[in-house]
Length: 300
Image 1: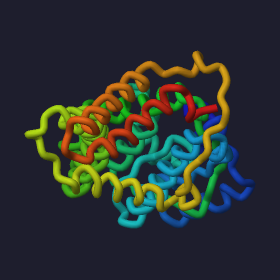
Image 2: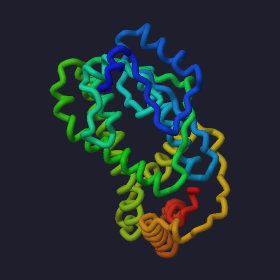
Image 3: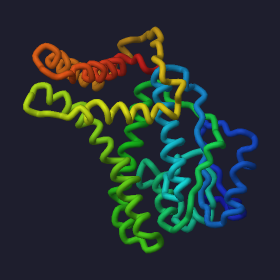
Image 4: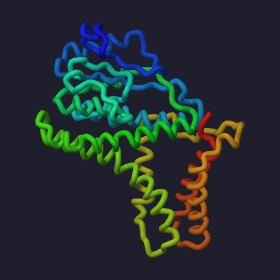
């Protein structure tokens, strides 16, 4: 952005090193910016070339397909705010400069830029038909590092930008409420805490405390519906993926996942032999998921 030749350009295309755009990518995206002067970003969809490598990449494909086909698509259709995915997008340079350009104050500088541009009244569009080939992390440690950055980065950005969003005068109050509550607070913070504490702490502990009653809709129906909705975007992944033989076992052991899986397995066994509920059915599957990740059976 600091080079002199950028001053002669109107648009900036961003790709990560592992992304492979089609030859007609610019022909299918630039016209949106040309014919819509209020548009700041055209976001394309990711397509994964290594989705069938292992169970880990298959699960990531399902999750990210839901993100693009449901979250990004709905945000674009309703003209609501949605985040920039960091790559496979075309920016209007004037919008970037008006927002102050790239800032390295967090590990999610792409989301930082998108929020600042959105608060200036610019609009974004997501094109589901334009796909860009990319790769998914196939090793569990790389996946865990990526998820840590994607989880902690938005929370840190939310802490830095809350007052800036509240005092913004360029957008309507409903959009500020959407960005604060739905985009940041609910999707980037609450959902992570809820998932961990409910399924890894509260639910297993309820086995040892019979007086704690958790309704079936909270333990069975809601998680099942959420899982099915996430899988709809990738119907070919409904069936069970067979695990490949692994080598270098000791190098693949993930201690945190092993400890959590063992703890939940103990809770399941206690409920099976001494409890009067059917929570052990869910806990056994939860423990299996952690233990499978712990012994490295989900990556290459």
